[in-house]
Amino acid sequence: MEYTDQYKSYLNEVSEDIERLKTSSKRFIFGYTSDLDVVLEWDTEVFNHIIAKHLTEAPSVSDGDVIDSMASFARIVSYYVKNGLGGEVDITDNSICEYLETQFKNAFALGGTGAQGGAAISALGFPAIMHITDMSKEVCTLMDRPGVSVVTPDGLKPIMQAATNELPVRHLILQYSKGDKINILGQEVEVPLSNRLIMDYDTVHKSLPIKQEFIDYCETNAKDILAYSISGFNAILDADIMSKHADELCTHFNYIKKENPNAIIYLEGAFYLNPEVKNLVFDKLAKSIDILGMNEEELVDHTEKHGVKTNKDNLDSVLEGLDLLLNIYPAKGIVLHTKDYSMYCGAALPGVDYVKGLTLGNLMSGTRARIGEYGTVAQCEETLKLDLSQIGLEFASALAQKQVDKVVHLVPSRYMEKPKFTIGLGDTFMAGFMLATLQDEV
Figure 1 (spheres, rainbow, N blue to C red):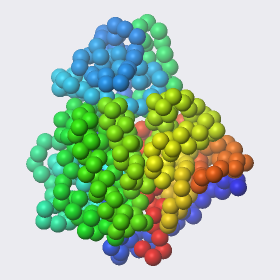
Figure 2: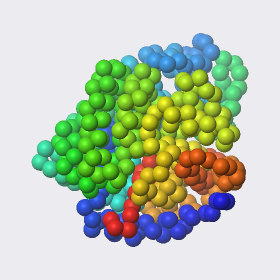
Figure 3: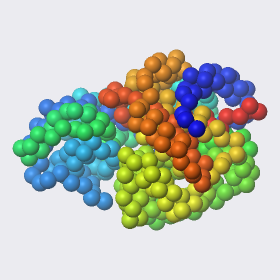
Figure 4: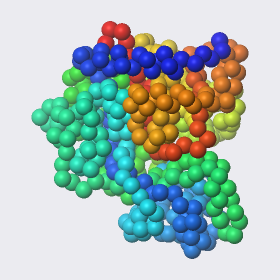
C-alpha cells in the first residue's frame, strides 16, 4: 500500500491525548541519565586554525580512542567532520575542555537521552516521570515544565523540588554543517553532511548510578506504565559494571512485563565508548525489552561487527540488516530513525500504533532540527510546511511492493537540507514514538 501522509491527522489527536493522560494514572517513564551540554558554536575558521596547528597525521578513529591531547582531538574530530559522521568520544584531560570553550562561542543545553526525551514529550504537554543522574539546578531548570516529575526517597516530586546545588556534569557538543570547507593537511575537504560529535569529560556516567527508589517506584506502579525509555549505558567503560547493571535491570524489566505485559520497554541506542560494553547491553538487555531504537549509522556499525556490510541507501540492504540484528538480539522489534524516514520492523506489539509513533517521532525531531528547541504543538504544526523527504517517499514506495514476513512500517520525514540543530534529534524522535502506546482507554 502506497504511503499516505497522516502527519496532520495524528498531530490533531495530540491535544485530546494530553487531556486524557493528565486525568489518568498512566505515565511515560524515562531513564537514566542527564548532563549539561556545552554546545560549541561551529566556526570553520576556528576549527581550521586548530587542526592546522595540531593535526600531524591522517584523520582516523578506532575503537577505544580517547581525546587526551590536542593532537588526538585534531586527528579524531577531523575524521568525524570530513565524513559528516556523528559520534561520541571521551575526553580525559579537562584542560582540553577549557581550551575549546575559549576558542568556540558556546551555549548550554540539556544532555542525556532520557532527559531529552522527557523534555521533548513534556514540551508538547504530556506528563513524564524521569530518572536523571545530574540533579543540578542548571540541568533541572532545562527540564522544568508542568507534569515533569522525579522519584525521590520521599516519593514523586516536581523536578525543581528535587534540584540540588551540585555542579553540573558537562559534555561538549560540536556541530558541523554540510557544505563547509575544512583544510586537512593542505587539502580542502567539503563536509558531506550536517552532524554532531559529543565529547565527554565525565566520571559520573562511567558507573551510571541508578536510584533504588526509582526502581521501586516503577515496579510498584508497573500497571500504570505506558512506555519506559531506557538509555545512558554508552559512557560506561568497565564491562563488569555494565554486566552487573544488565543483570539487575533484566530482573527489573521482567517484573514490569509480568505485571503489565502491554508496557513497552524501549532501549535507545548510542555511540558506545567501549565496544565490549555495547555488546553486553544488546546481548543481555535485548532479551527483556520490546524495542531497540537506533539510527542508520548505528545499524551499519552493528551489522558490520557481525560481518555484514549494510548499504543505508538501499532498502533491501537495510531490511536485511534489521533482520540480521533481530536474529542476533531477541528484542521484539527495531525502530530505525534517519534524516529521511523512520521504520518499525519486527513482531506485532499489542496496542501499538506504529505509524502514529513514527509520524509524531519524525515531526517532533524535525521541529527540534528546525528551531533548535523541543517543539510545542503549534511549533510542530509549522514543521508540516516542510516537504516530505524524496528519499523517504522512494523507500516507502519500494516497501509497498515487497512481501515481508514481519510487521514493517515506514514513514518519510519532513526534510531539511541544513537543520538548525543536530543535537538530540534521535532522543526527541524516541519520545515521539512512545506516543504510539496511547490508547482510547487511557
